[in-house]
Amino acid sequence: MKTYIVGNWKLNFTVGEASIYLHKLLKKVPIIREVEVVIAPGALALQPLSLQIDRHKMKLAAQNGFYRDYGAYTGEVSFNQMRGLVDYAIIGHSERRYIIGEDDKMIGKKVAAAIRNKITPILCIGETESERAFGETADIIRDQLASGLMDVSEEDLGKVIIAYEPVWAISSVKGAKPAAPDDVAEAVKFIRKALSDIYGAKVAENMPILFGGSVNPSNAGAYLTVPGVNGLLMGGSSLILSEFTDIIEIAKRVRS
Ligand code: PGA
Image (cartoon, rainbow, N blue to C red; front, top):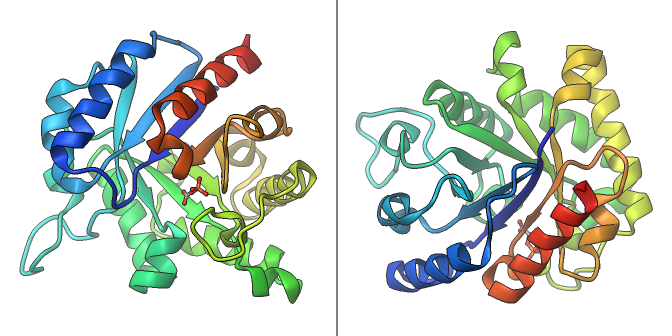
C-alpha cells in the first residue's frame, strides 16, 4: 500500500497564488513511487491546476462536491463536473460537518457520488473534544464509518480512503492540541476493528487510514510510524512549501 500525503488548502490562495505554489512544488518534489502526494486546492483552481500538474508526481483532490450529478441545485459543483480533473475528493471534513452543517446521510451520498464518477473519496471521521470527554469516541467513529459507507457497494469498498481527524487536534480549532501517537494508534485500531465488524477482515485490512490534525514536520515521522497509519492529511503545513516538502521527504524516508 502507498503512503498518502494529502494537503488540504481549505479557503486559501487565489487561483494565481495556487498556480505559483504548484509551480514551486513541482520543482521541489521528485517522482516517489511509494508516496502518493495529493493537493486539494479550492474548487476554482482545480481546472487550471489539472492542466499544470504532473500526475506522475502528484494528484489533485477536491475539498468537497455535491451528491447529485446534475439538476436544479444552484451553486453546487458535482463530482460529475470534476470527473477527469481530480483523482480524489475530501468528503465529510469536520469543517463541513460542523460549520456548513452536512449530516451523515449527505456525507454518505457524497462518498457514493465520488465513486460513481471515478473519484477516490477520502472520508473524514473523528470525534469532537466534548464527545471524547464523554467517552463517546468509539461510538462516533463507528457511526461515522457506517453512515459514510452506507451507499457504497461491497465491491467499491476497496476504493475508499479513511482520514481520522479528531476535531480537537485540528490546528484551526480554538485550543487545539496535537494528538499523542498512542491516542492515534488506539483510534486507528478501533477503526480497523469497526470496519472488520461491519464489512469483514479483508476490507478492514486493505482500507488506507490517514491521520490528520496539527501535522507538521516535527511530528509527521511519529504519526507515520503508528501501526496501521497509511498517510497524513494536513491543512496548515500544506500551505508552507518548505514544511510540505519536508513532510513528503519524511514519508519517503519512513517508507524506505
Ligand atoms: P491542520 O488541518 O493540519 O491545520 O490541523 C487538518 C485538516 O483540517 O484537515
